[in-house]
Image (cartoon, rainbow, N blue to C red; front, side, top):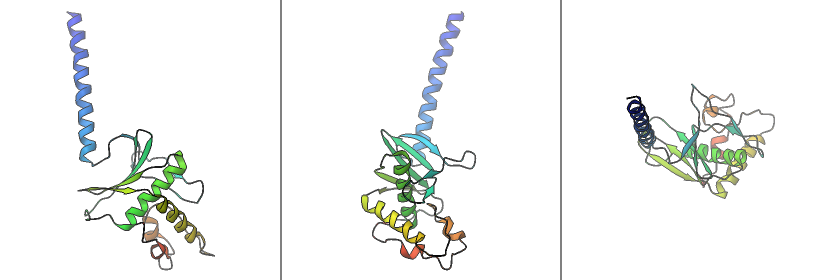
Length: 177
């Protein structure tokens, strides 16, 4: 009798494990997340590790980092209306996260993902984008006598003391985002 109960318990746990695996896979698919293992989530309940660039003063936290084999892919989740094409500032943000991941982990992402409520967009991380991210940060730093917080998020510009004088949006290279 005890043998049957033990076998039934093990079989029950096995079936529960399969159910849980399928449930998690469906939830990821519902969220529009790329395939792979979620290795970092930035939420209010559990803030993610802040990533720092080594070559320029840039830091930030992607909403998710997905591991696909030997790659780390940043995913930025956006709320509100889903555009036909991603907004330029969202593209710049996910490319900055690609740069941060490359400098932090030493592995170059092939792309980043912007997840809107109804659609996800993949943004290729090319050498040209990396150069433009560096140039953008260096141009912001070159403003003499001004202090400017440099983060990989547009929220900073909205809340910046120098909002009226800041040229960040005007100097963003148009050919990569």
